[in-house]
Image (cartoon, rainbow, N blue to C red; front, side, top):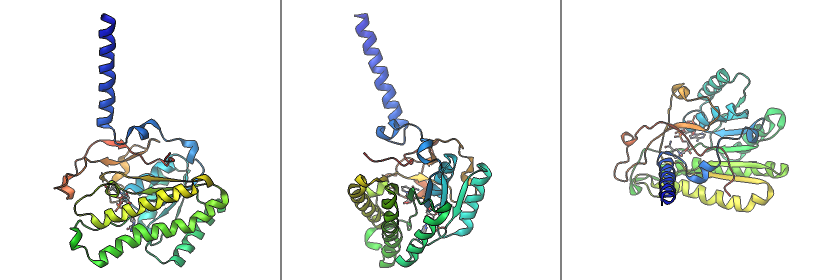
Length: 285
Ligand SMILES: NC(=O)c1ccc[n+]([C@@H]2O[C@H](COP(=O)([O-])OP(=O)(O)OC[C@H]3O[C@@H](n4cnc5c(N)ncnc54)[C@H](OP(=O)(O)O)[C@@H]3O)[C@@H](O)[C@H]2O)c1
């Protein structure tokens, strides 16, 4: 009888611990089970991050530098990219970082040049990880209030630019027989969020494209990871995020609780502690 009670108590404790972990985690159990970032997977590899001038891209750049990656940082704003580079080198003096500014909404010829440049950096060792993080999001508005200009602005950057860059870079990876695309999608690419119709549509498009790409290239050594975070509070200006831990855990900006469907303005973001997030590139299956 006592043994039975002990087993019951232990089971209850185990269930409680799992539930507590689930309630406080910012990734699902599959992600949590992957454990800490594995240095050997990225050390010495070339990681190209778009949208690296602020927010998630900036934090990712720092995390990858901490893991010993060689970084290519991209966005349109070269001054901010240089700021990010200087901050990272200040923290990790041995960090290898190149800045490659460009506009993702550019035409194919321009993007072709950008890819050639990225491939030629670091003694032409080639891009191992392409982190598609850049995106354009307009202030929230109802689906029927969206303009054609807004539609084009979002799709040109989030979808067309990202896909074209992928098409241009993938042949280099295929030649080497390895490469990894990491795509920063969004929870908005999974479920509806009022006021985000076009942004959400752009993320759905990315999900569709990259899941298909993965199914086509997986056997040729090319991996694809699609990341769908919920709302994340990020810092947008100089150095504000630098108080984050410099440890090799994949720490991101402060997670907020998901927005309620009826309240979708910024003030709804509740700050919680800094948490690890699902951002270390990992194969999906
Ligand atoms: N923060 C969130 O709550 C959240 C939630 C889910 C998913 N996400 C996704 O996570 C990614 C990063 O989010 P974030 O909040 O860190 O974004 P953010 O702070 O708005 O930063 C966006 C980045 O993209 C770059 N960018 C924008 N338009 C560009 C263009 N035409 N060409 C090149 N670069 C461009 C920006 O740099 P320049 O302006 O210098 O070009 C900036 O570095 C995005 O894909 C976003 O959709 C974010």
